[in-house]
Each structure stands twice: as structure tokens, then as C-alpha cells.
Image 1 (tube, helix red, strand yellow):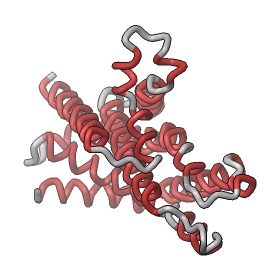
Image 2: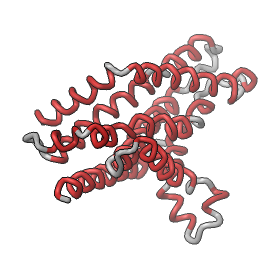
Image 3: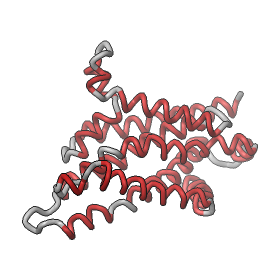
Image 4: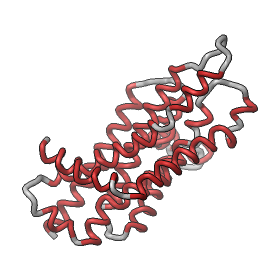
Length: 242
């Protein structure tokens, strides 16, 4: 655990000292708020619900999270520090987890900055029809698990190349594919679409932000995270011994 913590501090320190981190947080908060209040027509609907926010979360994450993950390994390869990193007395999985957790904290921080939105809604709604906090908490939990899954995909993509743009495109493409197969109009044209749709990041998130907290959804996301972190470790190991 000590090595993971040291890698975490090193990586997270890099995020703190990078101006792009604060730009990312500001843009994410502004864009998420605008999509919720204006694109989802929150003021016209007149309902104290966060559904109009969570419906955009997968698409926000689809571009913002691969932008975070693309530098996790690609930058190490480009600057030549990966070889030095691998000579340190740490295991490959400790390095992978340390980098992953540092990036995950940034994703969770971006998500936490949007929490004043439901608080503000609850302050101004009619006391007779207060906001239902059940779907809100489920939606945030689902968003955190969805973000963690896309981050694991993006980190693995970053371990495959030293070009951050390629890592970004690859992370976006894989994540988009795993989201889109959950839409009925897509799965209907795929053989065995009903089964394949259960592998979608979106279909499990959909039930959670509607307020349905089911163990299969949580297990699915944890399995996706573990699988892509495993691929990340194997990718690092293969390059280490090549």
C-alpha cells in the first residue's frame, strides 16, 4: 500500500500543478450546468428532478475522462520516464493502481463540484414537492462508477501508445462503443442484441440514475474496472520485457 500511496501522491501532485486540471474542472462544471438548466429545459418542465443532468453525464464523461486518462501512460512514454519508473522498487500493479486512483480522485472531484445543483434545486422548490434524494444519490453513485469504468478504459488505451491524441481517440472509441450498444435502436440490429446490451455502460447507468440500486449493476461496473486495469497491467508488463 505504501508504494501505491507514493505513486498516488506523485501523480496527483502533477494534476494539482497543471493549469489544465483547473480548466478541465471549470469547463466540466459550466458545461454540465448549462446542459441541465437549458438544454434539458429544466425551467419549462417544472419538476424537481436531476434526470435532465444525469442523462448528459455519459456524454460529458465520454470526452472529458479520456482527456484525463490519455496522459497517464502516454506522457511517460513520450518523455522517456517510463523506463525510469519501471526500474523503481515497485510492482507494476502498484504503479497502475497509484496512477489510476490519482486520476479517479480528479474525476470524483469534478462530479462533486456539481452537487450544489441539487442542493440549490431543493432550496427553491415547493416544500410540498421536495426533490427526491433517492434517485439523486443513485445517480451520483452510478455516475461515479461509470466515470471509474471509462477512466480504466482510457488508462489502458494510454498504455498502448506514446501519442496522447491516439490514446484519447482510442479511449473515446472503446467507451463510445460500450455505451452505444445499450441503446435499443442499436442493439435491435445486432445478433443477440439483448444479451450484448447488458454489456453496455449505459444500460446499467440508466437504471441507477432512475433510482434503482441493484447489485448486478454495481458488480458489472466493478468487473469492467478490474478487467481494464488487468489489461493495463499486462500491457505494462509486456512492454517492460519486450
